[in-house]
Each structure stands twice: as C-alpha cells, then as structure tokens.
Length: 422
Image (cartoon, rainbow, N blue to C red):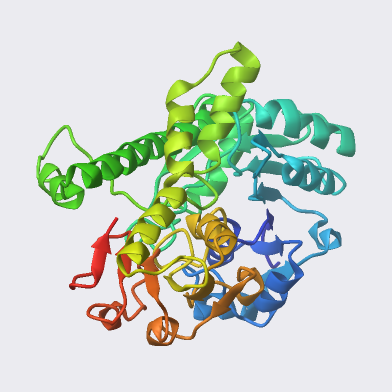
C-alpha cells in the first residue's frame, strides 16, 4: 500500500514562503503554494524564479516532482495537514496592517480539518497569533484550537543572498499555543531545518523576531548618524568602523547606508513600538529615534548629491542622475521599502531625470518615472552624476571608477578621484 505524503499549504510565495515551499517538497511533502500575485504565480508555473535564493533548477525540479502546485486559488488547499502563513505585514500610515494575515486565516479556516496545524511566520506584534489568528480560524471552521487543530508561531529568519545562513542552516525558533501544538510545529520544522529552538509561547517567539530586527535597526541608525557627523567633522567614518571591527569582543560591525529597507527593518521595530504604546501607554524611545534617523537618510543622500552638483556648477533640476542598484539589499531583488524608492521620490520632486540599473528587480515592480538601463555603462552614459545605492555582485562597478561624472558611493565600494563617499 502506497504511503500518502502529508499536504502542506504555504500562503505567500515570496522571499520567505518560496524557500519554505521548496524545502517542504524536497523532504517529501505535497505542497500547494498560494499567492494572490498572478504575475508571480505565472512565473512559478513556468519554472522562472524571482527569488534569488531559489534557482530555476530547484523550482523546476519541484514542479517536475508533481508535488508542488503554485496557484492563486484557495480551492486547491482542501485536506491540508499543515499550513504556513508567510504574508506581508506592512505599515499603513505608521499603523500595523494585518489585513493579509486576516484574509489568509479566513481562507484557511474554510478548509481546516481536525488534526491540522496552522503556523504563522509573518512578522507581527506579540499576541497576534493567539488574539487575532486563532479566533478567525475557530470562527471560520467551527473547530477549537488546541483541541481540534493546532496552532503555532515561528518567525522567519530569511537573509536574502547570504551564502552561509539559509533557510535550512539557520536555527528556527518555534512555538505553540499549548504543548501538543508546540510538538506539531517543532516536528514539522525538524523535517525542514538543521535545528529548532522551542520557546514557551507564541508571544515569546513573536517578540524574538522584533528584538532581532530592533537590535539591527538601532545600531544601523547609530552608524548612519555617526556618518553624517563624521562627514561634517572631516573624519573618514568607514576607516574608523573598520578599525573598531578589529576588536575581538564588545563590538559588532554595522555600516552606514542610504537608509533601511525590505520587509523587516523599516517595519518590525514600529510594530513593537506601536504595541508598547497601545498596551502600556509609553513610548519606545530607542525605536522612535532610530526611525527618525534611518527614515531621513535618503534626504541626507540627496543633500550630499546637491552639494556635489553645486561643485560642478549644476542644479539638480534637469540633471540626469543614474541610480546603481535599487533593491534594499545586495544580491536580492526585493525592492519593498527600499531607500531607493524614497530617493526616487525626492529626486523626482527636484526635477531630476532618472535612469537606474538593477537586474534583480522584477519588471512589474520597477518604479515609475525611472528609465531602466541594461548595464552600468549604459546607465551612466550621458549622466551628470550617479549614486551607488545597492552594490550587487553582478554590477560592473569598475566602469564607474574614473568615469567622467561624480559618483556618490553609499556603500564604500568604489575608488577613484570621481568618487565621493557617503
């Protein structure tokens, strides 16, 4: 008698959900990957990956196995054994927007059966799993969490482009609303990753994710503000950071940049700050200060660019500016909350004519008002100035060094008499 593979539903097929789906197929699950972005699902169905960490070969092998179904239709999720929600949790006017979690939970509830498990991976404030998701699942299914079905939370720890720490090798924090739920959640991820780290409840797991990203957010704000002051003081902040990083204890290296982006740093700390204010009536001052510094780094980049152009006796209005790299992170195509988007907005307001190069960004996510160049040489041809925003490995940065235009380097990657560091 043939064994029937367990069925896993992964809601969201982006930078978090697709790696989970591919690994689940690899270890033997029948996987339904649900995403409402029809363009992305069409790409997946053709075997074309838009997630840099998932190769086309891995995706095509999953499709060829017959155990991976990418779809926009929740009708395909019936009789699932485990479901993982990896949908976005953006901020809307500085307030948490959990619409995607709510809608996903309602859709899953219609097909929820006894003995199934639902896991939330989306970043959110402590209490979301038990106070928001569980009631929606119970109401929509008529079942009782912890009795008829099982629930947990496991924060995503995806670091796009990291060659060492991927989904499998990165320890996975897991939790459940009760002991049996924890066992179900941990058992699932034990099949997928090298190591799981159980915590006592979803609230601790939810806070773990916020703590990790708040730590990064605050430290990046520190070096960003330091970079501003160091420039005004005539000090090379990059050299000081490199020197400090030789200390083998008590220091962790963070570097300045044009701002923060992605689905984590611009959003996660604000979820924690919002919950502290809502529940305790107090301000999370470190987060709010870090938000202020990091949110205004694109403004500082534009100010530096204007100073550079003034030195060339040019106005920003009407100048042709080349943006090198647009995504928020090196070797990733994720443009969500990228500081490049704010840079584009500001430069457009000042009347600049914009061209950019970034082969990682999907066509349907390319920013409006920005011409797309196929390579760096084409992007800077005829430009009055350039900004290195994201230093992808596949960009020909050597063509920028020594070019006949000033270049503002926000990543400390370039050398040459035409280069100005952030």
